[in-house]
Length: 413
Image 1 (tube, helix red, strand yellow):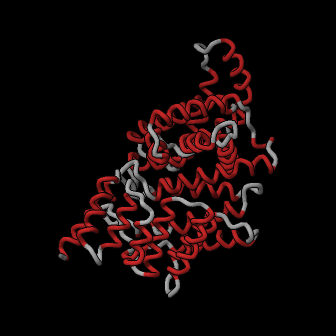
Image 2: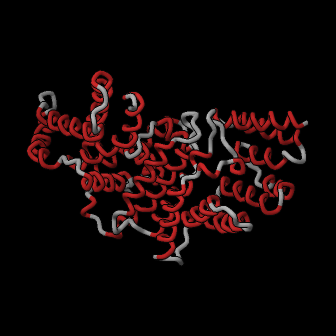
Image 3: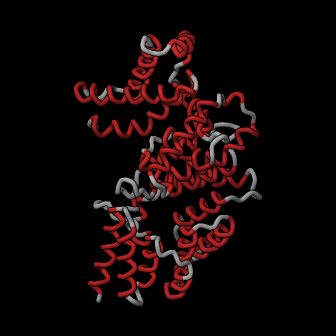
């Protein structure tokens, strides 16, 4: 049986946002801080109680019961609250007995509503994503700053302004029509995409893979596919991408937390069930509207080819897809990935010109790629670039992986 200290952080990732969402649905988004306080107190009680009594048979249900009771208690003890606030919350107290319900459907509806609450057009797109990462996914300010490559003070101010806007805009998803929801869907998908990427390659905690974040992103995207307005081709394409990428999580690192390069991964560790789910959602994404190809479609297709075996034209297919993706939405990461695929088709030597033309000296990925490309023809240059990548990256696991490549090059001299 898992020790409480091991399971509580996992439950916090998966259940905290559910509790906040259900409570906010019960007594309005304006009181989100109250909902967050109740959720935090619930987990504090769990960590103290479970350490003595052990884990209950159903930890999630135990958390829901405690959260519901704490919410009821809160509205019964407001002696220190100012009169105008007290009167407002007193009215809510009479309704809360019936509205706080942690059944599966209400959790799903509450989560969907909260996703769209945080993606309020009153806020900038960057602020919407920050709010969603904090409220829906439990990101710390430091983690959000890492994801945006921004200062923590910048993120703090952005979140403060965003939360103020949420409090002044009354929102209920039932009042929205399909057009209203679709207007916010792009930001929702961007948020889930960013969440997944943070889990797939984390820089915040010196862990290369944070499975909880990947699984949380998949879970929230599944919530979208369960609603008729948000079950779109783009949503299915994003879910397919997440499934394909997640299928290789166990093969991406060794026991020391070091990266295992794609060519060295043990394919037997790939999760075939997730690959099959990826195939299913990719077909769903293309069947409904094959004329509307998005970056999620192309990235999902690239991820599909990475999980395929026995195809002689595999890397040519991947390169073709990167050629399309870079036109739809250019990014330095996409350009570097395209250069790697180019090396697989035309060889490392020709790919060096492609990679060096990108001129991204502040990127560890740029130097890591050049280290890889130079490894067969100029070991000194390869070592130089690997050392530059080590200097730039903040990931301990990545530093270890790069150092391993340097050691191999030195041994072969």
